[in-house]
Amino acid sequence: MDRQNKERKFAGQWLRRRWKAVYTVEASLIVPLMIAAMALAMKLGISMYQEIAMEAEQESIADMWEVDNFYTYQALGEVFDD
Image 1 (cartoon, rainbow, N blue to C red):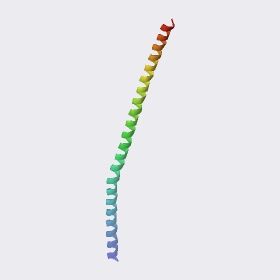
Image 2: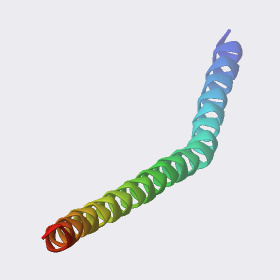
Image 3: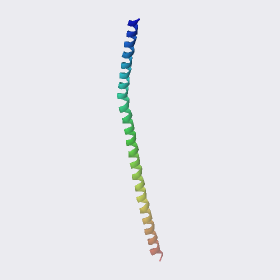
Image 4: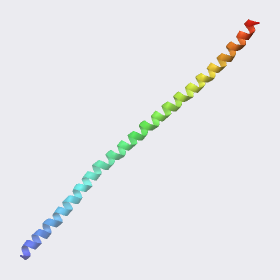
């Protein structure tokens, strides 16, 4: 009876150590993959933000030129109407 208890105890300890090792291996694979995925998502988000900001700036510059052209044409119209 004593021998069976020792064998069970040894088997239990061996399995616990083995499962701890399995978790360590899984964590060493999954954690870097998750960090890389988050970094990629952040990089894509930042580049999208920069692209949209640049496009908005170009649109505002184009709007300013349109207003300038409008006033130029209005002034020319007044000159030629006289």
